[in-house]
Amino acid sequence: MLEEVAREQFDGEIYRLAGRRSIQRTAAKLGLTGDDLRDFEDAIGAESIAQLLLADPFEEKVIPDMPPFGFPTRFGDGSYPVFYASLSRETSEVELRHHRQIGALANVERRLTVHLWAYRCRLNGQVADVRTKHADWPWLTLAVTVNSDCQALGIEARDSVDALLAPSARHAGGTTVPTFNQGALSEPEIVGTTVFSFDEAAATMIIRRV
Image: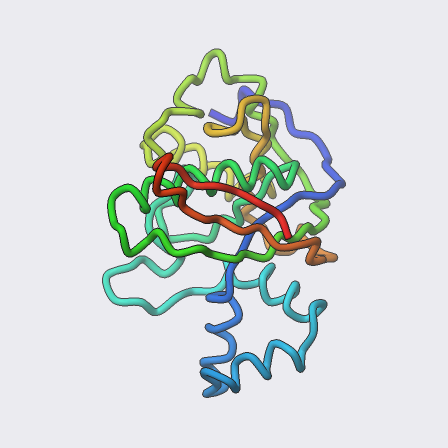
């Protein structure tokens, strides 16, 4: 499929959200939990936390019944890493709100307020801009996240480009940047905190920045 899409060199900032699980996995390898974990975060500082957040999606996970790189997603089947980011923080927030809202509506235990780090990093690599094919490939933004066409595209992309520029399925006009090559990413920096909270009366997930 990607033979129909021109390659281009991209050098710019992309944005992603991540939670404490990324740090907890590293701390667990050191035997740290509870107060020791909080002390660990304070000790290593924001710069090192950002480095861990960038690296975590590319590290294999050992979790029962889950593929090494997570459950299937739009551009990944779990057998290889995909670093899901966006050209704007807002797009990352809207994308994640969708998934958190689905979870909250299905399970009251998933309605807890969650604080996530928002961070940016530099992507410097070859990309395929599949936004230009959206009219021909409407499946790029299917409401169903996991679909075979996107996963086939992801498998092809990981062997031929560093990342894709793809239309966001949840944020009108937004661009997601699924990235397959960790070596194309650098200079991570935490830029703030995004809070997701569930409004029981409106039955919707609320986003706010702190």
